[in-house]
Image (tube, rainbow, N blue to C red; front, side):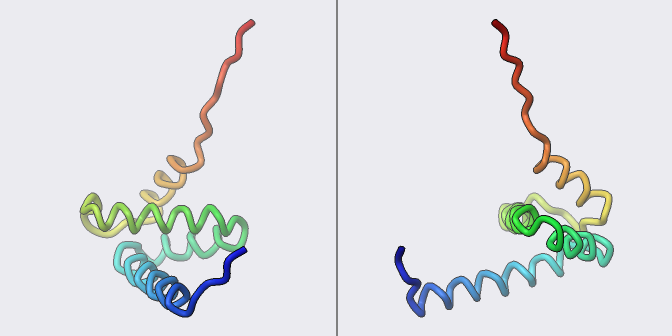
Length: 88
């Protein structure tokens, strides 16, 4: 396994700071609280959701604040599992 250089660690820290700033800009208080609760139960899902929000923000697809209801819809998009029917 490779060790991270000081530069890599610094880039990761900068990205985390940028991610937190974007999240605070985009989400209402209730939505931020929901992400906090998700982090307690499913940290991987919370990270995935935050990355998705940052990508939407950077691509200009987000117009205005995201409230709790809209956040639930995004969560639903990320968590829906595809169902496969295997027929024999």
